[in-house]
Image 1 (cartoon, rainbow, N blue to C red):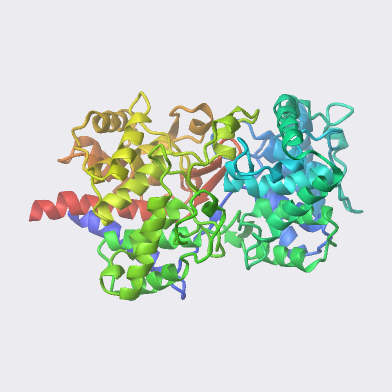
Image 2: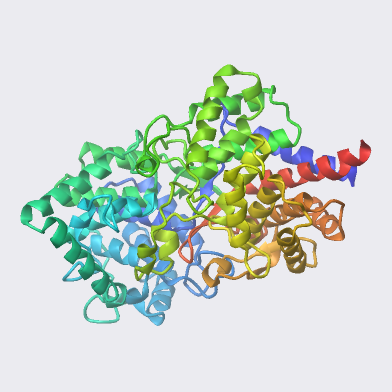
Length: 629
């Protein structure tokens, strides 16, 4: 196996080294289905920007993803299709001007939409998009008072109790809803035949909000009143909030969806379609365009910092010298991306210097915990040789330490954004959408970094609290739920590697339960695979085939937790070594990350290479090199 192992590792090393950019970064595509492609077409057509080449290419990609029954899916095993994604694709293809209602595949899509309840059954965000573009009427009364953003920090619910992701979408939605903005053009399709009732139905979306927001509105009246002047102040405050968070590239918080909403919100505030801020936003969105399978794809954002940090780390774990040109150039790139400005995170953590990293190459004010520890992992060898890196390292470590939640875990972006009051909101998945609570994947990965690279151990109160949080939040079957990956395999990998790094004995009951669970779900071919359905059902659901990325996560967990090679490890290694080529297999493109359960999934093209390399490198270090020594 040793020769096969070396050959496999060398192949992965050659792939990763060969795709590095001149600036030291890696820009593997961050693929997010066809939703962003659809919305980009709708946005350009609504703004009457006639970029025919881009629109045509995006439309072709959307059409190529259609299923035989006329629907579009979010992932391979989703079922017959996803209604919301199908409506978005149908609308975009018609609005593109390159497809007509009489086309057979458009008719198939229409039939699928109508047979599944039409526009009334799609998700709320899509209804808002349709309302903005004149395809769905706004509700008569908006139950969410925009004056709520004026509530002070001491109020039980205030703006900064929401996650940064929720704020970036919530605020522009409040602006467009207040205006009931609708923008149509002479090229707008007519989707009225897809509404199964005479009037657009918001009742299911808004009925349960009424009680909650009537209480909130009553609180606002008692605290600050609701005169007209306060309404205008709230509108101005919302606009200012957005403009202050526009990145240098013109996007709002670097997300496609928040930038999409920002453009409509600014128009609702009186900005022209060709206003410089809007033109810069469109230019910024264009910079997210990448190529997948020889077709253009509109990325949700770029994953450049994330990819570069993870790849640099995996290369170093595989034996690539920190003095090599590859690592030095990656190090220079990562160093330059450490954030220098205070973002919203400082509201909850005011006494710490900026020191984190963000996900995207254009992100300057929204650092996150996972990217920060990934960047620090990649920099850890340069710290020993460069004094300048020591300051960068110290700022990063101090920042991540300060972001530990009071419950002992880590969330994604900020500290203690986990108000129980907001979990009562009538939104499916409110905890994950509106809040930023501690999660097993973020807590485990942060713990692993701190224990491995800063030498903190179980004696430190911070580590004790993190270990306690992880053990307390283990599932009954021995797994952990991973918020940002798919799902239980990912969370279990992060939790176990973090606990073992922190000094928890591999014989510990929690570790053994996790290890036994992984053995139980191992496939006959030696690999592992988990369905995106797991995040919706909140229980492990197997994928019918193994994937290389999920196998690498499971295998790396077992390598960490086992003292000796086991049959399960050998079988997992055999799978990785014999399944290097799956270019035409659907498992290669299966999403490995989730953003919004049941709505939005992510396929990181780099994962097919870096995580198998990491698992192989750790196997070699523990079971090959140790045996030789």
